Length: 260
Image (cartoon, rainbow, N blue to C red; front, side, top):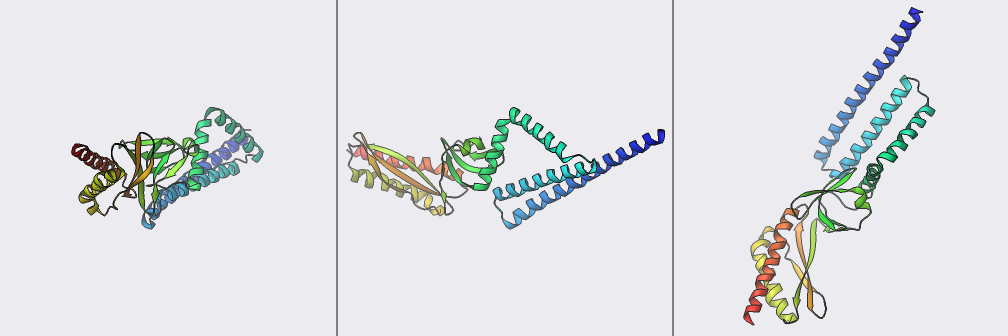
């Protein structure tokens, strides 16, 4: 009987030892592949969201392989594995539904690509430059010079406006002027003069000159839409120069008022 007990202990010890070695090997292979993705991604210039997708695939494959190896070593029935997975899934579903929804939404954002890293976007009432697209959150660099993490469930349930085209952020905003001033005066003495002042200061930085046109009017005011062009990935320049353009407009508008 002692021999039988010793045999059982040795057999179980062998299984645990083999499973431990297998997990260690899988872990080191996993870390090596992650390192290769990071290194080759940098060398090939892969966009960050592509690297995130590759990391996610490797992580899922590693988990599946590790689970399969352990099941094989311990002769665990696949029916038991499926049942346990269903039970764990149900528990996680009740306890972490928001997290799971975020993960699913993260998959959708990564695969559908409504925007890419360094794009400037408006997501519902939020706006900013996309700094990272992760499984749970999308990180935005906002006009307040802060990093905002937006849950991916909010991303998928909101309207998304991508302001980045052809490598340029095409940012628009409106300004209004009363009917006391003619459209010609506003256009020539305020808007065009402001754009000239702005370009004298900043267009030597290879910036495309801003544009403006009359968008609409009501009984109280005329509404002009301004468009400013900033290189992709340079949101900090946008946050600095947009107020400068507004200041140029207001300065020329004050001159027009003073002249009357």
